[in-house]
Image 1 (cartoon, rainbow, N blue to C red):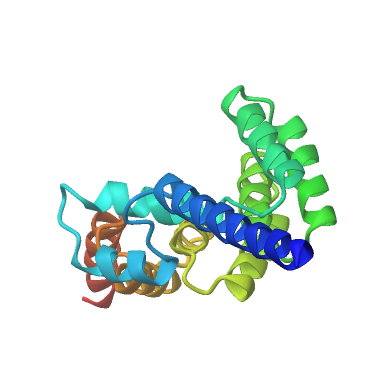
Image 2 (cartoon, rainbow, N blue to C red):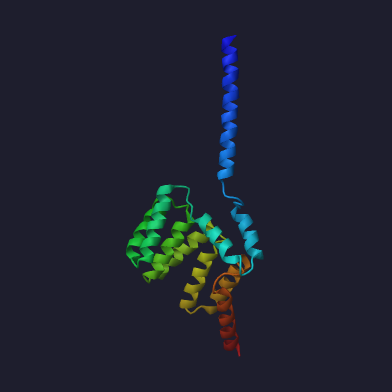
Length: 190
């Protein structure tokens, strides 16, 4: 009988502990933590006051690999880029891609380093990989547009920039690029 009463008390204690933990964890989660899909819905309707915040939240979610060591490699690579050490950044980003070839942000960051070193082919290869892994990656799309412009392919760049605005209407500099390229291409047709 004592055994049954003891087990019953342990069961109740366990249930209370689990409930308390669930409440604590629930309160510790950020309020309004939206999914990437929800954030993209908000981004489509964002105005100039909310656009940058929502875009930043999407990028922050993309930058989370799920592994602290991979997140550290990404951070170190970005810090190296910020410090102007593109070669070191490339090493960090390459290690990141080697360790997790399914992490799109590793390829995106490495494409930035390749571009900074003037390595256009490898940059385009990495941007292609980003878009295979994450077709809505507006940053990678914007990068492709910039490279196409540099390669004197304005019609292709314009098409890419229009695709960016379909996903991220307020993307920085893209509306201006569309206007500039549209005028340039119309001038060529005259």
